[in-house]
Image 1 (tube, helix red, strand yellow):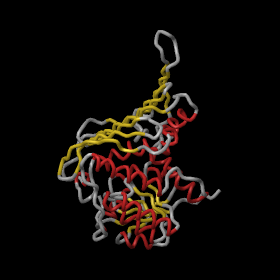
Image 2 (cartoon, rainbow, N blue to C red; image 1 turned 180 degrees about the horizontal axis):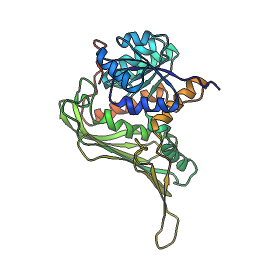
Image 3 (tube, helix red, strand yellow; image 1 turned 90 degrees about the vertical axis):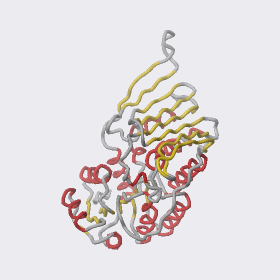
Image 4 (tube, rainbow, N blue to C red; image 1 turned 120 degrees about the vertical axis):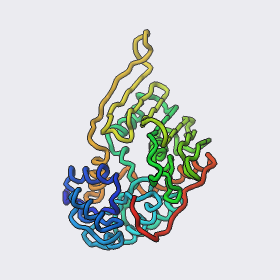
Length: 345
């Protein structure tokens, strides 16, 4: 077994990096070898606070650094595709924050580049690596829930400040891009029990700013006949629930995206005393961070060749579903962006 730490380079000094990478890397013993940000002073402050070994002048210099083997990309959504491509062309593996790219066309381009370069580019749907979501799949696999019938995901949050990049169309912001993509991906992860990939059958939403969705609701359908529903909003109370119902019972996950905040999973089945007609139990799958599980999965893949639950084909399929939701809701697909300046979120 090759237990050599991963050597990670960080693009930008985004807020999410502490939760998504720094904390997990300190837990797993992987190295944060370099960071580059939009200003040297910003990068230096980030490195000092988070224990990064070196500060580099810019993103291109980081991609050219021989010691960096894995690039972490937490930049604004519009910079995921371009810098994922640039990193792959530089021969680096990439762990990209979701979404993988601004739209499906760009996602297909990134995937083709990664495949041609022979590098691994991973979209950061960290929740899938946690035992909580794996348990949902087990409940379907072992037949306790019966045949898949309904899936329902709600991912809502209070409104970010008006100048937040998530409200920028040019930066590929919007409720679906930031939140709804989790619900759509969770539906896609159930394809093995739904007879194949879900498709969008209807959607509606409202804009906060021109082209930028404040909320969206989407109805989906699996080839096997199961229905799906995703609601996402960037102007509501916090809610991050997933309900998966089958012919014999259902499971509800209290916080499927961030299980370290709430790891409850409630299973209800139709068998039980005649007075109730069902049984109910609560399982807890642990509050260890899903981001830590994700980093361990990436290392196992890169060091030992272990299979990954996610690949570039999965990322492309999710991008296609996102575009379908926007189109069905009468909203514009996010624009791709060429590399001109390297600003981080």
